[in-house]
Length: 490
Image (cartoon, rainbow, N blue to C red):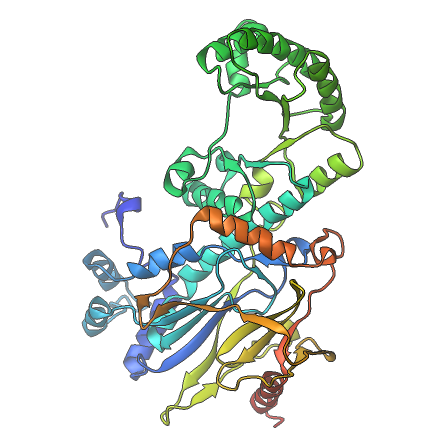
C-alpha cells in the first residue's frame, strides 16, 4: 500500500479510533444513525492533585468541526480495511453515506479559560447518534491535552506570584502537534511568551530567546562569545552564564553589558540553567546591582515546576524574576494525561422523549451522570461558591439543593436570588458555527479573572480545599433511580 507523506495536508476525518467507525457502521446497519443523542465530555479527577482545571482547546475543536467531512482519500482507505475473515469490513453503501454526511450537531461548551471541576461537562454534544459517536476520540484528543497544559501553566503562574513565566518546552514536547498545542495552552494558562517561533506565527504569542551553551562553546573565550552576541543582537541580550562557571560568567556578562551601554543599548539580563539556583541568583543579584545593573533580569531554567519555584521564592529567597519552564510544562511531566471521558447521557425514543442513560461501575467515581446536562455556577460578592450540574429538561427550583454524587450527606442549599451563570455556551447549532472566537490575550485575561474568583484554599498545591460541585437534587434522584433499575434492584 502506498504510504501518504503529506501528513499535514490531509483530511482529519479519520483522526479517530477504529472502534468509533465500527460502532458508527453498526448504527448505520441497524437504522439508528439519526436517533438524537446527548454525550458529555468531562474528567473525573483534578489534575496534578490540585483543586481545579482550566478548560482549553475549544478553538481547535471549532476548527476541526468546521471542516469535518470525509474526502475521497478517506473513503478509499476505509474501503480497503478488512475484517478477520479477510473480506472488506465496510459496505459500499456505508461509504456512500459517509461521503454525503454533513456535520449537524449542537455543540455547547464552557468558554476556553473557564475554571472547571470533576464531572462537569466541558463539552456537550447533541445530535444524530452516528455523528456524536464519531466525535468522541478527536474531541478527547484535543481537549484533554490542552486543558492539562493550561492548568499546569496556571499553577506555575500562581507559584511565581506575578513573575513572568516563559514556555521553553518545544524540544521535549510530544511531537510537532504537541509542541504547538502546548505553547498555545501554556499562553492561555498564564505564560508570557514561548520559544516556539511557529506558535508565535500561528497564534500571535510573543516569542523569547537568546542563545544556548553551543554559542559560548563555539568561541575560544566566554567573554568573546558574549561580546560577539552583543554585536550581533544588541537589543536582545540575555546572557547564559553557566557554561563554565556561573559567577565568573555573570562577571563577564557585566563587562559586555558595560560595552553595550556605551553603544546606547542595555543588557536585558542573565540566565542560570544549572546549579544551586537560589545561591547563584543571590550572588548574581549582588554583582549586577554593584555594577550598576539593578534592572537586569535574572532568568532561571533547569527542569523547573511549580513546587521548585515555590520553594525557591518562599523558602530560599532566590533573586530570580523570570522563570523559563520547559519539560515539566510542555509534557505535563508529573501527570501526562488528564483522563477525560466521553459518555452518552440521553437518547430520544420513538415517542420523541428522552431516555436517560448511566454507565455503571463497581467504582462510584466511574458511574456516569444522566440527563441533558448544564452547569450553573453560583457567586457571592464575586467569589465562586458552588457549581450545580442539572438536567436542562427539568430545570431546578429557585432554592436548589446540590448533592455530592460521591457522598449524599454532603449537601448545599442555595438561597433564592443568589447570583449565578450558566457555564455551557452555544458553539454550534444544527452544525452551524455561532461561536465568536475570542483573542488569545482575552482568554488569558479571563483565566486570571476565573482564578481570582476562587478562594485561595482551592488554589494551594498541597491538600487543596475541595470546591463544592454536585448534582441538583432532582438529577441526583434520577441517577439513583437509573442505577437501581440497571442493577435490577428497582
